[in-house]
Length: 246
Length: 254
Picture 1 (cartoon, each protein chain N blue to C red):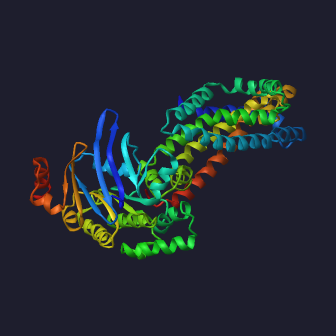
Picture 2: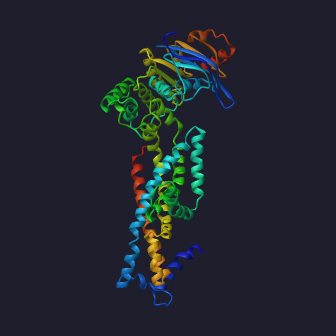
Picture 3: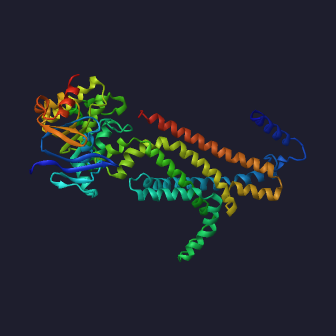
């Protein structure tokens, strides 16, 4: 498939003796939205952390834009420029203002001028609907606002793929929707996204492909409506009924 | 016992100021001409003590960071380099190290065909800096490790390389935790600089020793010496508290 942006083939990952990913395969084409769900410890976070090489896989192949990832620092630098990441805990830099959080990467890693970086930062702050918080420190914002700043920070690097690792799991319930709204808008604009989440409403609305994982393996994948209404496996059916009944 | 200590000391000192035979504060009495000359002689070591301590502290802060970084690596080989340096250096008592640097290192240099003399000034600085760097390295390591892993991961994902993420993300946050123990080490260096007297460095302790030899008044002279160090340490403490306050007001929570 020529337009696969991210391709995982037979990827294996161990943490000590724990086999976190078992011959994992996944293909993500340009503009596709993939949602990964599954019980905790199923390896879903490990998938996104391997895609951007925060974790090094031990076996198998990961290709970004057709180029295989190796341990070569150049190959890692290449992923960083194409793959953005949003964390569960936001991981904003507490000693910097919102604007500085957003311009640090573009200025230091991309060599943009301060002026261009700030213009870009304000553009993306607008896009996540918090243009007026630029000069505050992260601690002065609500959780939902912080996560939207984190999304804007990733967007400032203008990545081809954006990874989300449980982006709403650390948020108070009333702040979840403001973050999901931003993510839906990104999806509508054609951003390629891989989202680890339990937000099934979001999955139903935007996912082109939904992957259900358990014990380091893909149990089932397909269109969300297919998984919701007619799951083939018992494990998937049980998991979905548990998280959907509330 | 503890409570009695302070009044007792004061009493002994006051007694010493009286006309008792065994005390002779006249040696450092600034109102007399010879006393004033002696005080000037003793205090004239202050400049050397301050210079040695300051340069050694700056070097120790730099060497400490260089030694700490491999200790934070995921590669075992790098961590081993850090461990060996720290364990080896901090096991050497200051005095033997001073002798080794001052008397031994010129021989090492000569055998390598180099003609690098080591004077007491730089001998003392090298010894203090290297000896202290093992401790500053551990302080850096603890401070950097106290910053959540997510911070360096976030720095990586926005494309920063290792040194950029240290420089712009990790160290600015770690410095607030590193500074207080680093200040302690600075005080330690000031006190340990007294050892430089044994290789002939004309600093505070050396001056005191020399005066004792001619005046035979060890109690009075060493008492003044102690207060000279106390003064230096109090100045450092005040400076550090000021610095901490300044940084604290900058901090808007974590």
